[in-house]
Length: 427
Image 1: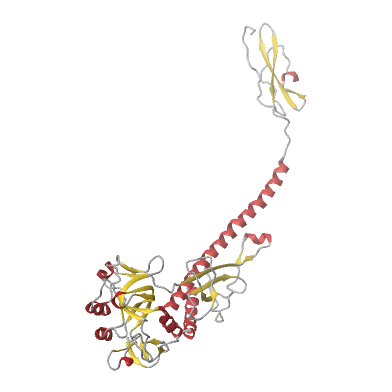
Image 2: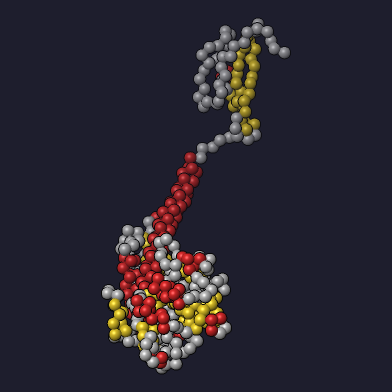
């Protein structure tokens, strides 16, 4: 039990000190011997420090307190230096990965942007070039201009702030920077382009590269520490156009839909594109003046007036179709030739004239062509129009039904509805 009397703590060091100081005050009769200082004794792998505390009660009583210390500590400054050195090497490696990989990703993104823009420009230029209508030779001529457009647009899109160049690849090698070809399924991204420069061409593939042969490889900064000084990067894009127009719609910005109420057999159209069958080249169109003159411009023409004449379309290959009504009158057909299809005409078909999910649109109509259409057709000579294309017709006369499978863009070049039936034409 506790002893009565006053107790004073003269010295209570909290930690072991290699050079303990003597207590500043002692009770009478007590010599400041080493026993009054902390003493350390080894007990196995632990250390115990004894703290001497002196209290007074009718004499001197010495009490001893003990404090456990952590297991024996050893100096490890050398080990830390080694660990830091190893860590710095790792940190430098991660810095190289972050900076250089970021640079490579940035380069690829800019290459992809350039490839996308160049492919779209080349494909769009090819679509708008009327030389394509001249067959395989015309497509080759159009491809020359499209390659030039792709190269020019790529030069307008620097990569990593450096001027960029595409190789023209005029030979259309499959591994070239600019490749023209045929894409069977433009909406299927898994299909590959078939290199070709002819009437089948409907796609352009552009590959933008940074390598030793083209524009130089991408230099690496930190990775050079590990022996990697540069890297090759490339990106590809394919722009394709679907040959088929699927339909027409009238909007406040578009105006009337430029479709004539005539249906042409799809085989006759394909023959025209290939330059075979009942084709001619007796008229030339000047895009600057919009005028049509007698002469040659290399674009084949077809006489779609049905008849038995040498240069006439055989009967059964052309007919008028009912658009906007179940039974078009002559006045309705004349209006639609002059003014094309209005929103009111298309409202009869649900607001748009469009191929169905199976790729077919059924329209009623009549075979042949009436002489009453001569005047409105002469008024639109030199203007562009679209014709529905059919692959099958069923039913006789006014009960005919046409299976529309596509649309084709045409230009009215000349009209003659007088004279002998075998000499009449609509070019």
